[in-house]
Length: 167
Image 1 (cartoon, rainbow, N blue to C red):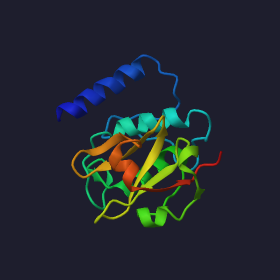
Image 2: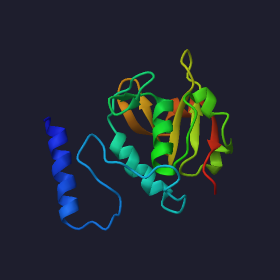
Image 3: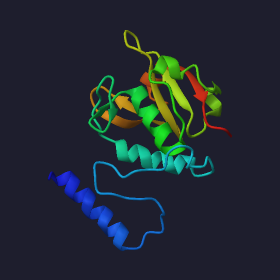
């Protein structure tokens, strides 16, 4: 058993023994199950839940075509987070995802909006806006991470945003 898994198991055991009031099943594994198929409501804590989910994925390596904690690409991350938190099935590629929902202006971004970029010589890139100018996405070098939209690189290659979640 690797150290990371052992520490995760211990932390989950402490939470369970402390009588955490959550009513979802928790199991010691690579990741605890989260509600699916619309079980999570879209309400005022979207940003908080997205940040918690981003923290769970943080550091997962980038793998083109990946959709799990062994490796994930940008659109796979969007697909998994939307399924796990909101019960929403998203298409597999960024090109397909940009056709979903309705356009959201850059100045009107809300937590949960998808933000799209067109870096030169690369495929389209997508992330999920977390609020406060930050979004979660995958980096080929650093894996899943949180970045700021106001960084020169992201500002330069920003393309569009889409609102998938209802207001």
